[in-house]
Image (cartoon, rainbow, N blue to C red; front, side, top):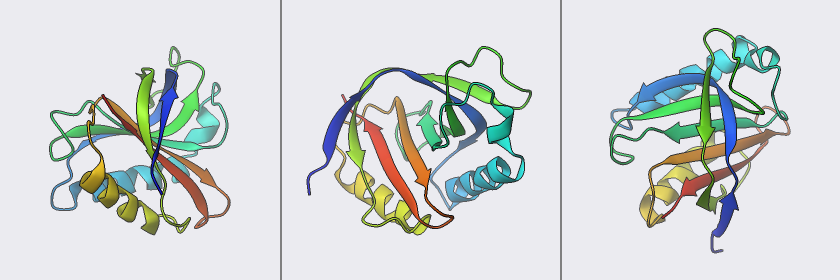
Length: 152
């Protein structure tokens, strides 16, 4: 099945941030720690301007490409990033054209490795501006996920 392309209007995301790299398991460890903090610290309840319950994982501020340093923000789509609680980072994601990838199944988080490997192997014309995942939880392990990769 061919991937779809979608024009996504600008939006705001707020959550927890880490600067990381896809080397020696560093990103997996760093982003895993963000997931733990997001859930254990009740970040969703701290965001008054939250839009929905979907969890966004944004990859942005790439130094060059996916083999180099980038920033990951794990959180929620919000209506504004003007007034955020202490310890929460906000980011404006510009409107862009995205190639949309979906995992073969909803077995979270195991399905993420498969979809990212497919992205690294097949995605062309990546812009390396802001990419993001949207996770809609039906249960702890049953999650609908879409991964949006910015393209030129």
